[in-house]
Length: 407
Image 1 (cartoon, rainbow, N blue to C red):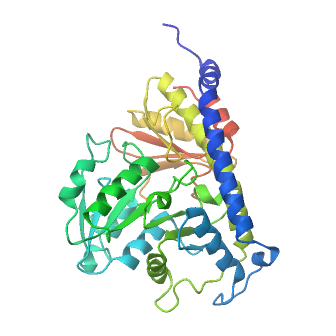
Image 2 (cartoon, rainbow, N blue to C red):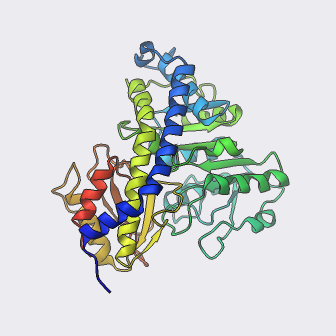
Image 3 (tube, rainbow, N blue to C red):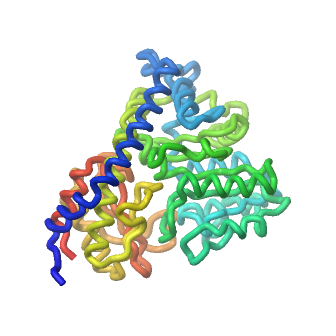
């Protein structure tokens, strides 16, 4: 059997993926029109780019951004703030804002992402976790460690259940990401059991990868980070929460304080950047999806297991690559770092990071620290040594890195 070199693999991949790329272009156009409609309908003006100081009272830009995001997510309300530190922070605000002692939280996707373990109370420290506040937790094991077990939902959801948690992205698990269709099925089952249960979707990494968002198919609450998809690669910090008005307000009071809710907070001259990043986001996300499709094709040709495969529907901006060896993980991370626009001269090494149980190696010289819409990759140092390749604002950046990679 002839072994293809890297250049030949990439040429073959681009020919093979041409039809798939056209389907991604249709998603981009749909979501661009959605964003443009929201900006025009909400009558965004230059006056919304100005900002105030101190408490942030009467900040027209802040109020307008919330209105635009609510329009995009087809929800009653939204809160968008630079004060959200990360996706984990927005999720935590939703948990602590909406749950009360005696309530039960059920994870539909097995064990959630590593940084949520301490928040929920299944980590090693658990200081200030949901568990400390008397909120109980259950998780539904995955089918074959890869798919949500829809049949098991009625067995786990109880009269105590106040919220079900649906993590759209795979996190550091090699499971299938949840498509909007999958999320709709989960919500339908839960609402038939009890219509008052809050269906909360962690939308991190998933925005604009499909034509619909979780709130379009019945989610009561969703959230994410602005240094991922919706920031378009230019928003330097922040996050959003969108959903039913009362739930968004309850989550907002966790970010600020009761009595303040969503009515305060200085935007630090970021209103224009947030709206401009949103305008760019549909294009940025599709550039990423094309890049990770090429990446999946490349690594599969090299004999590695990938998830999702090159032409499969992508519901987040991450491709998981089972490399099998620590040295392979390190080699790929070094190549990504060496071809990053920032800090290309540095060498990534594994280390302990806050919120993670294992050492983690991370590569990616990004203009915004921790930005996962920009090209980066990371992996927990544990078997089977699965690397998570994500982002890539320019398809050609991804192509350039792959063209230099030899395994």
